[in-house]
Image (cartoon, rainbow, N blue to C red; front, side):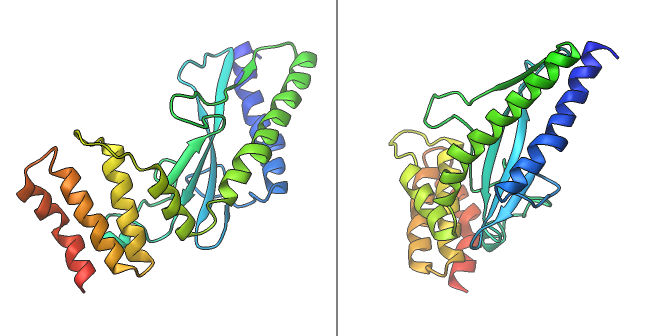
Length: 223
């Protein structure tokens, strides 16, 4: 067995024999096609996945834990296509273990090519650190995002407020806040956020084009 093959096999073994059982004990016992593990809260789904770093090599696998909060219906309510399988990347709120603020890198874990006796000890240590990170950081954070209302509150608190050209992330956040308002039945709040989205979008494209793109959502709002 080559070192490369051994490291790849160890990573798969780490996931299936150590991480998945440990995550199930933490409450993440569901398996969805687009994520490693998941569980349902009160109208939302918490998703966990592993992001493998692009600088991984055949002899070293680097990865971190990614988390997301998916709100069913958030896309459909404004006429957007819903993802076939919810993933961390398509979640209304998402992040990575250790990345607790802007500019802070996530916590990366490593599996290095090692002789068999040392590899077993190293793999146990890595699994324990991953599960501890989920239990001590990710799970408490997700518990503050247990409902669509809490997700909306989080998005509102973290929306970027600027006067220059908005980033795609800012526009997406505003759109999601409006969608959540509509999903929750608060049409007046949805209308206010659509007005804000139209105003911010007009900083990067023609106002008539913005109005045309938002027209289907306003029709849904009025229906």
